[in-house]
Image (cartoon, rainbow, N blue to C red; front, top):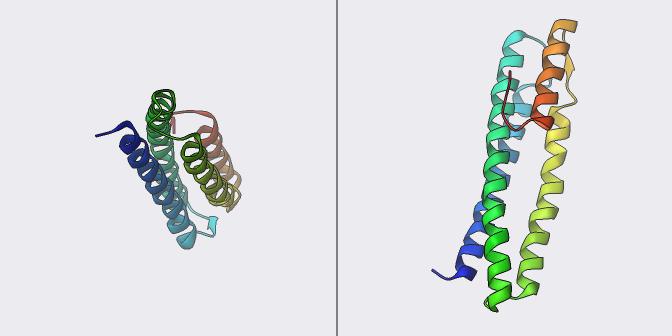
Length: 133
């Protein structure tokens, strides 16, 4: 397989990973308009754990894209325009997908205890690589 082929395949895997993550959030949000019970919080935790794993996978995928892109650019097998175009698409999609994350992190809760748990999960989701909840 060529370096260009690896770059393009990683692009499609990155896009698929982004859509999977986005639809996982949308699926959660369609069933929970607020964190009203302990069960809702547990479902939120499961969704957040999945998001954190998908984010780590995305880092790996895009690292491979970076290496393949740089190597292909240096060797002349990938054009700068292709690199900029595909990375631009990923950036635009990421900004779109971020809206779902913000919605999931702005839900109301049914009690102070649930609020603390919910905020702890949100903080961990945004600031740590692995779930600690």
